[in-house]
Image (cartoon, rainbow, N blue to C red; front, side, top):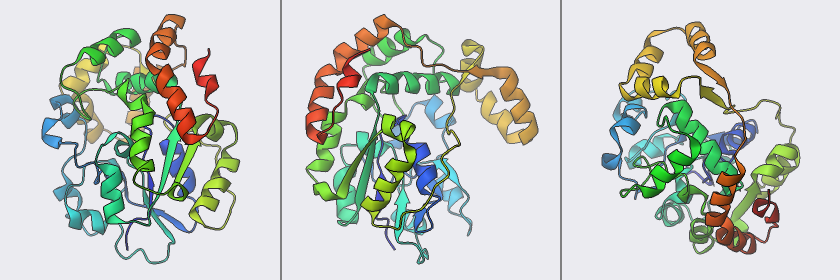
Length: 310
């Protein structure tokens, strides 16, 4: 059996929620690794920063050594047999799926997916790139990848000479959707691609899900959508959080303490995040994104004018 449905991104645009909702359907199976990143062959693991390596599970030999494959959020599978194992013996499902957000950014993924399964269906969820960048920044702050303020983190990432997945944050690049989408529109027929907007998923999730079921040609069913995934939590002390991440202390603590202790520490260490982006930062980002937003709107034939105002 081969995977025949791919949620390819964009990162920080609601892919986890969409994946969780669609996973509830009786005819849809998602791989035990949500993001195996197998088809992003232009992403070189050896280029990853020490910080990214330290905080990302990369030992696929260890993962696939057992007969049972536990759920895993993300890794980088580079072995064909390993990838095939994610879907072997799944014969009672119509849709076999995975959700690697690197596939939208990757220059190779679209063609690699086509070569693997020409009948594959592609789903892309897009979010206002300004809001996506800020959500991405909050994630980087939470994970301890940065200790800087939003604008400082953006400018540092923009000025970084060497860039790439796991090499730099790509705060700006991951929101430049037009060229990323074009790779899929040039590779797959339009009936194999579905575009979802984050705002629509947020405001009317059931309508979006029923449209997805139509796209996948599976029976419509009611889905539980009340739970919020990837809720924003920010460190109370970004500098300490960054230091603990940098030296590997957070990962070490997680491996030794109980779930109840983890929850207690999380409450003491983190606070609720927010979506407040300053007017100056919005203007700065809009100047970068406005032309790409207009081209993207024309490409997908959707009104994205709300992304151009604030």
